[in-house]
Image 1 (cartoon, one colour):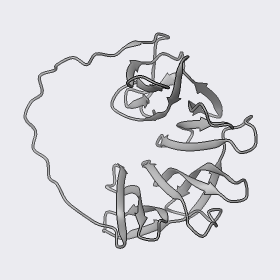
Image 2 (cartoon, rainbow, N blue to C red):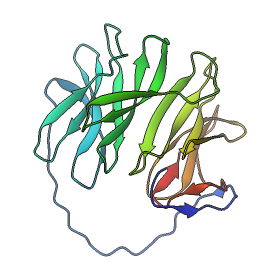
Image 3 (spheres, rainbow, N blue to C red):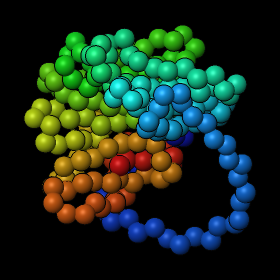
Image 4 (cartoon, rainbow, N blue to C red):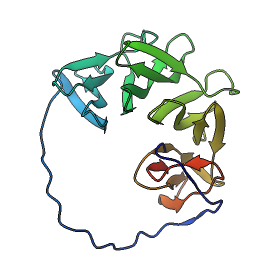
Length: 219
């Protein structure tokens, strides 16, 4: 959902990918593990090769993590995540080392978005403004400056999940009629995946009349 700026048109249409010719490319692969993890989600890598994600341990705790280029691993548990079994997840990390994510906010008894600054080691809570108490928020993508980010939001009774973007403080919420789930996240192209209540998933190109980038995507 966040990348270099371009303007999207205001249309919504079924997306059928073209069969492009791609030159052969070689890649270098490496493996790493998080001690104690039984589930590991590697979500993002920035231009300094810092990696972010989350894992689940054998006790059922979900924790975020950041792995530095020097292979130093830092685990993340938001200070507001105070239940006996924790839930903190890291998603995208930007060029400034700020991680977007989600945690269980015990004070609000709801899931909130988070930002973790790897430089200052400070956590910042984010909830989509103007929503009722108990609303679920997750921040999935963030740009290089932190001024633009995106994710999803679901107010009680949690029957519908909508995508949102925050562009320089202006929040826009997206949903598709007849579909229960829409999420905004980082990806290679502006598109949307939405889940109807009782039929297969559909992928669409998205239109919004706001500035999103070619590396931004709405799921």
